Image (cartoon, rainbow, N blue to C red; front, side, top):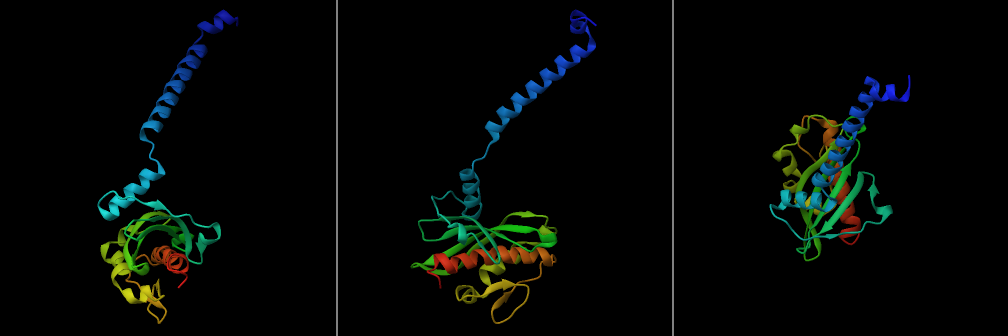
Length: 198
């Protein structure tokens, strides 16, 4: 087959059509990526608005690398507000199929001292099931149950003991463990770093 015959062949026409489709789709994807891109700051402000019902100014708290992880999970980000409160994004480990749950935890401070948790909500999860079981009643346990215990060093668990705060049943025990660990991860950082290591 000569070059002129190749240019007139169906094969060449198919190559041209496919190349054109690829270029057009690639261009559209690049444009849509720029138009639909959400920055980390926009994601954070969206989470803040969901929790507080309005936009709020914040300062990003720098976390030392050695302080990012503890036995409960990992601190992803911390934001400080003018009212003295902190918004902490923490990931809890040991969930269903070794998955995780990431939660937003609002630490309330009064006169510079930790005064309990003001709000807890799920940010995301990995490999967890029955997430619909984590309703308002479940999440309110972190804010309302044994506030003094939270302030004075107790952590959340699936049972009650002298050192733990028993959580309500979610119907998803392993996932509850990851949720508790996300909140406990934030609590650990609050006590060790934000509340003067107390």
